Length: 175
Image (tube, rainbow, N blue to C red; front, top):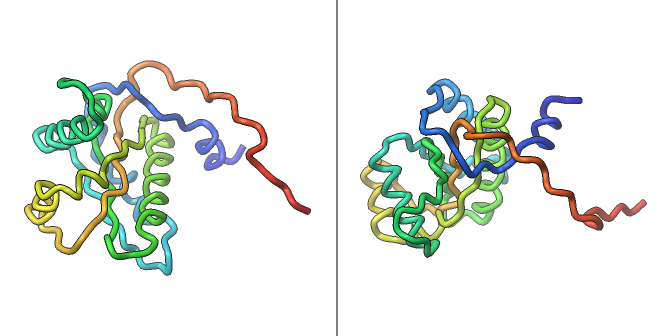
């Protein structure tokens, strides 16, 4: 079977990660695949922020936990040591679509490299808060951005989950 198709069929969302940080080269490769995601009019209007700094990661954990309404101490990133935050230009009509394609590439690349990943939501809510708008400025990022998602990445703790059965009736073929 074609390796790309195999990765698409086998990739699963991971909800338990080892604490060990993946190799920097692997993270860089994953990030590069995001740069090649399809995008409207070739505009390339997305930005991916690679977060491996434990203190910054903790800020995202806490903000995401509060937005999601979970109890103190819960990690909505399931212990993944890498958070790849995908943002898109706020005023771009294809922002959500382009950013979603980046997220898909990131997750497939992680799987292809033997790493686990999961799409974590609530980035939009985070980047509506003054704290995170200010954070972008601290990082040297100008402009207005919308949060698309967090791609949590790391080594899988345990086994790769099995695929749930596919629901029938989700393809309509018209000849």
